[in-house]
Image (cartoon, rainbow, N blue to C red; front, side):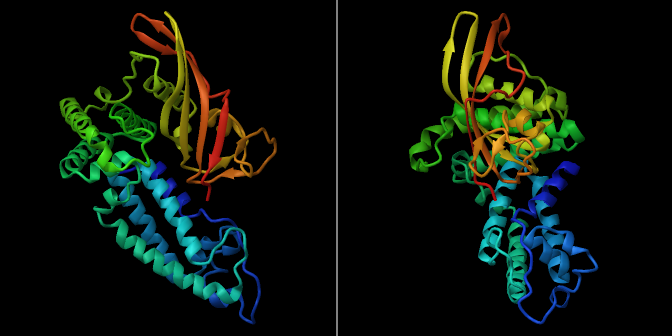
Length: 370
């Protein structure tokens, strides 16, 4: 079973809209429309959709079922980042389609219509999440779409996922989180080696040359996991020096920095790609673009922000900027892109990353917030 970390993500994922407050526009009180509002102290809830889930009995029960459906999906998926991103996008679309728009207040006369819409959308979402085929249909990466379009590759991916999940299921807390993060790094490395990185807008028909590489990857990894016989130490936590100073080496370096700062509780790496590199006999500098996605809220100018993304942020501008005392927060689903140079030293056993922090960054952009 997934640890408390996964369930925390589910809870956070249900509250992505911006705060609004009901305005009195009729003779009805909010407690007339939302019978549980006072009992559940829903006035303390600052998220508009969640005020309705808090105060209405049917929505409350439906929200509980949705949480369980999301948790069950996370339990069967090794890549929780994609599920969290997809869920965050659905919540934004749900709120918009139900008339919850940014910080605009909900008129009290509109609460019933919004409530009915939320209930319909939630029940439909529960039905979708419980269909295992949705896991493949919901992918939005080029590699994921290519794999799902080929039954042989889709079955191989499912087999690998099941074997990896069986190993990780025996782990707890930080070991479980670190294993999931390392497995996601396997996937990013796979996409780079198979020519699928930064191919978001390329038609699948033009990527057929990558199918053989994907097939080889799955066969090799399945054999590796099978040979480990359930021993996680033979699969995870065996980070070696890199054979070359490239994007794979930077990905490993970022993983080590994030692990030391417990960044996996708040942010996950989405993509690492090399921008430029300069190599000498015994040293190298590799500038890479790193894309990350927020898993749990944190303040935009805080130790988490600077330690995990390399800088503080001005979220209104979407740019790096130190704003001491700011209360702006990254919410679940925000995506952050930075460019940073990493120094490497060449030793007898390979290339070692000299960077121990994410600071400083050369370029930064925060986008796609809720």
